[in-house]
Image (cartoon, rainbow, N blue to C red):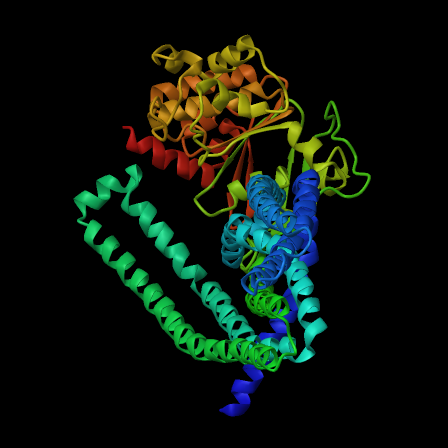
Length: 607
C-alpha cells in the first residue's frame, strides 16, 4: 500500500511540475489581452513593493528618537522629517494599492474578453468530427470554465511578483542582522507550503473527476426549467424525478467537497503551528540579543517589524506560488483545447471554389463511418449532380441522406473514396470559399433569438444587406407573410429569452430559416427536410417557389413527402448506404422498385 501511495504522490508532484509549463503560455495570453495594462501594473507593483520597508524603517527611527526623548536626550536630527516621511509613504502605499486594484480590474476584464473570444473562435474552428466525441464536451466545458475562473490565478501572478520583491527586501534586512532569523522563518513556513500544494492538487483531481457529473446536473437543471420540457414534465409527472436525480448528484458532489475540505482543515491547522513556532523562534532570538545589549531599541524595532513582515510575506509567497502551480493544472485543458486542430481544414495554397461550377459534384466510391463507429453509413457510394439539376435524395431513416449533405458541404471528409468538384478533390479547395458557394438549411436549423432581420441576415453574414435584400429573401421563402403579423416587423425580437421577444410556430420559424438560404447567392442550394414543420398546403407553396428560384442552379433536396420530391429533375434512392435507384418520378414508378413501393405506401394513406 505504501508503495502505491508513494507512487501516487510522485505522480501528483510530477503533474504539478509539468503544469508549470502552462504558466509561460498564460503569461503570453495575458500580455496579448492588454500589453499597456500589464506594463503599468508591473510598474506600480515595483514601486509599492518598497513602501512597507520604507514605512518600517521610518517607524524604527521614530521609536529610537522617542526613546532618546524619554531618556531626556535631544531628538535626532531631521526627526520630524522622518515622521513626515512615514506619513507620506503610508499615503503613497494606499494610493498605489488602489491604483493596482484598478489596474487589476481592467486587466481582468481584458483577459476575460480575450480568452472568451478565443474559446468561441477555437470552438468554431473545430469540425463536426470533434463534436462527435463525448470526451470533447468535458474538455470544452472545462475550457469554458477555465476561461473565466482563472482570473484568480492572473491576479495571483501580479501579487506573487509584488510579494516576492517585498519579501526579498525584508529578507535582506534580516540577513543583515542575522541569517538565522530568515532560516527559522523558512523552516517554519515550508511544511504548510507542501500541504497547501498537495491539497490544491487533490482539489484539481476532484474537479476533473466531477466534470461529467456537473454536466449532467446542468442538463437536469436546464430540463427542469425549460419551456420545451414543461408540457411533458407536467403530463408525465417528471418534475419530482428530475429533481431527485439532481439532488442525488448534488449531494454526492457536496460530500466529496466536504471530505476534502475537512482533511485540509485538520492537516493545514496542525502544520500552521510549525509556522507559528518558527515566527516566535525568530522573535525570541531578537529579544535575547536586544536584552544582552547587542541591538539598539531602533534596531530591535526594525528587526521585529522585519520578522513579522518576512514571515507574513514568506507565507504569502509560498501560498501564492502553490496556488499558481495548482491553478496551472486547471489550465491544462484550456491550453490543450487551444492546441486542438480540426481534421477538416483547408490545405496550404488551397484553390478558390470555381465560379461558375461547370461540371458539378461527383461522389466516387465514397464510404463513410462516423467517428467512434465501425458501421459504414455509406458504402462505395457513387453519385453526381450537375449544374442546373434539382436532385431529390430519398430513403428510409438512417440510410445516409443527411450524411451525403454533410460530405458534399465538407463538414466531414470521406473515410474512403473521393468527392470531386469540377474534377478536383473537394479537399483541395479553400473551405471558407467552398462554403460561400453553398446555401444549406437543415431540419434542425437554428432558431436565433435575435431580430427577424438578423435571423435572415445570418444567411450571408459576411455581406451587408439592405432592407430590400432581406425583404426579397423573405418573399421568396414566404416568410414575408409571417413578418406582416409581427408588431415590430423586421425589427421584431424573436424567441422568449428577452422581454420584447415573440415566439413563432415551427412552420413560421422554418420559413425564416428558408429565407437565409435564399439570401445567400449560392451555386448549390441544399434543403434537408426543409418543410417538415409545414402543413401540406404551405409545403406545396414553398416548393413551387423553390422550383422557380432554383432554376439554373444545383439543388439538393431531402424530403419524405413524395408530393414534393416528384418536382425534382432526378430522384436518387438510398438503401444500405448505396445508391440503388436513380431517375425521374415517372421512370422510377415504371421501374416498380423501391421508390414505387414507398410512393404507393404513402399515396395509400391519403386515399
